Image (cartoon, rainbow, N blue to C red; front, side, top):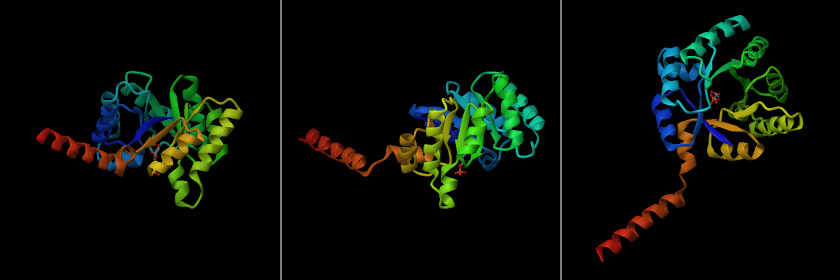
Length: 222
Ligand code: E4P
């Protein structure tokens, strides 16, 4: 399973990129709005910050309601990157979103269908040609449904049906989600920087580092 970072915050993206585990970035309108910056400018900055990742997801804005609106926005977003392959157009799981996914997939543009909460939605997105499908597990957990189970079922279905769309486990809230979606067969987990930090840390690692430092200091003093 690969890691994407789920943020529009440049500092967090830079920190995660430096760690060397980052394969992509996902953003959404709420994450961009939080930064108080112009959407297209931030996407351009992100693309420049992480030139070697496989995918940077830029979501069409909520005012794009028809497939035509979404495609028009996608075409502008693709230009930001000079047509390079790592920009991925993120589209909502709606009829219009699926139509736009089909159109863009046929043009060879990477797509990420977002806000997926059922296996059937994932199947539809895959059949429309989505490069990535994004089930939101945390938001399902929030309403007392098992988000990880959804990821597991989508992974099983894609295996049985030989579907090659990649599953991005999204709305990931903590390290246990990460372990469980990896075991469930997600291809990617998109996670905030705070979860990357949590994944690194363990109290015994910290204690171990402190003990090595103390022993080393004593030995040097003797
Ligand atoms: C994924 O692409 C979304 O941006 C994200 O994971 C949503 O997460 P949230 O439910 O924590 O807002």
